[in-house]
Image (cartoon, rainbow, N blue to C red; front, side, top):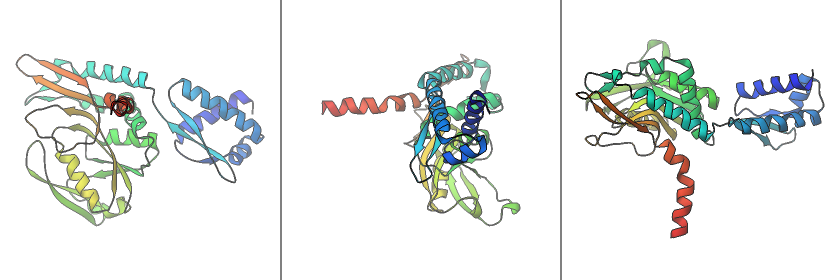
Length: 285
């Protein structure tokens, strides 16, 4: 195989298998090439991935030697996408009775969902995550988008038990928006004890649903490593019960009478700048 063809094939392999450790002898065998040639190819691919803001290749020490692709998404691209998303959600035609926003078209657009998954996954990529969890139903496409980038399975929490999923663990929780007691169910076989979990949801108001999932994970002795939401409501009348999370969009105000929507960037922007801010604060102290 020519080097140009091999570079395309290798790049596709890494994009399809993020965070998977693969030994150099494996590549040498399937491409019938010397390990030195493969190493040179990996240097080229790593450089291009960094230039495109898509991540990098990480060398893995060991007897066989190896490499894995660590996905990322450039801050500039992330910022551009969030700006486009803000503009899309600011359309007054999206206002529904009760002050809700119509978002089903976004969650049904594969390209849009894939981008959302990339942006969120880039934030969580450095973490050791075993599974992505969401609650049925609107959070499902987002969870799969994030999980595909992190290369981990998806676990879906439901409101009612399914006979096809075997024995389950259920809890009662208080919905943050309706203040009603509701039920969450998770099959015992769906999650290993002690797993590291990333919770993903489409919309968060007070955070009751996410708190419910967190409580459910305690029954499995699982660890909540990250929480990501597409949009959060900035409502002063609601007491936020979730503190540590990442959001792409913040719905500041929905004026039904004036048919206006104030949409801001979520706290993901602040989190991207947080290390520098912390360093400056440390210098002052």
